[in-house]
Length: 91
Image (cartoon, rainbow, N blue to C red):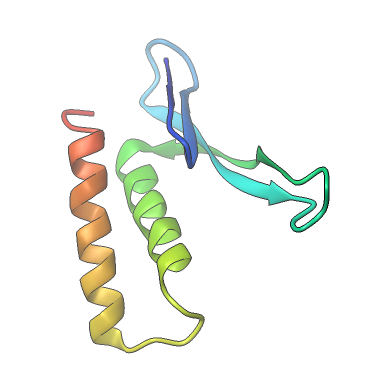
């Protein structure tokens, strides 16, 4: 099974496996004429729970500045966790 969104691809290792490969979208050649988005550098063999946490963290990092407060991080991360739980309900 493959689950694909605009920002990640989650691919089950095999039909009967509980492990998944997770790949995030990356901008290649940013600011150039041939700028594009590719899915690169997969994380191999992780549980669905680990994938959900990594997706939430990845999205949080995209939304926040490099430096933030613990409160702001917790707020954004909690919201992203809720969103991903809705996206991947019962997995």
